[in-house]
Image (cartoon, rainbow, N blue to C red; front, side):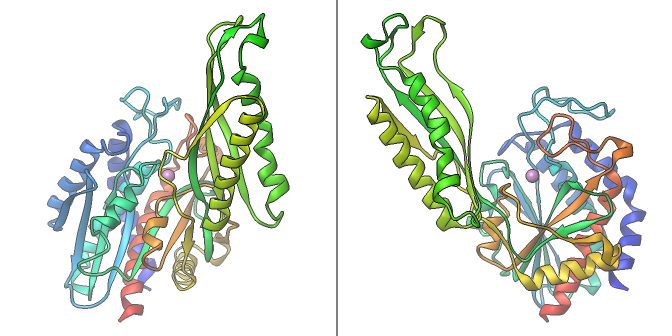
Length: 395
Ligand code: NI
């Protein structure tokens, strides 16, 4: 069977995938700075004799395999790391202080390079095109949007797209996802509360932005608890407060930052609007001005196509066993894979990575996040199987 052969082949190059991943892990690079990473991707593609377009979105690479005569399916990996200082005990830990592949994008890139290698071996069987998208800046930089805008899904037009993410919430050897909304619309919010600084002993001569900031933190929680339908999901998290340097001085301003999330764009825009209204009104009730900004890139929700999830689920069951494939509930994390599925049907799949014996129990974005490398061949095989099966289906 197609998928079992893919898994055997992926197991056969396990060491190569692991070595590639470890090399990437040692030299993590932040968004739009993935120079070394992108170079490793291109060098590998050159060695495999696979043509590619470069650069897209600064450091992005789009490779293509096949005879071009038929449908086109895309496989996507992200390449960027996070501004986190690594605290794991692995021998290949980050050599860039303050930067870490804490979201497993090193695994994603290595798994897709593994797929490139296996797909090259069977290129004669590829009737159509398989595109391999290596993108920068998933972590807030909307690299996926730039790749899309710069034509990653065109020439030839992509008809299905597939992406994987390591998932420490489910065990190694399992996979999961769902049809419909899988990941949330997500964006950043920044609130600058401006009052008038002064001596803390004479608050009546100042306008205190600190007490207003405190009110904002609690009042903004009523949007989700009091204004959204309880069956609708939303998040407002204030994650950072900065203002003042001395115990006896009222500062002139306080800056709050955080994130807003929802499972649909309608709810997302509603929450943003209510954050703006509540913050402004609470500010003026207490003689402060509040600047409300949504400065980052707002990610739309990641919506999986039913047919693509059916294909992925079926292949995952063949590769492992039906009991190892999970229908997962949506999660409020965001993903810029959403920019691709806005345009073409696709599926984003969670690849299990939890392994208690190995200490691979920390969630992504944690300084102790550790990947279970035994999951990597499964990811590579999923890429290969999804591409080959989808080309058959689309003919
Ligand atoms: Ni990630």
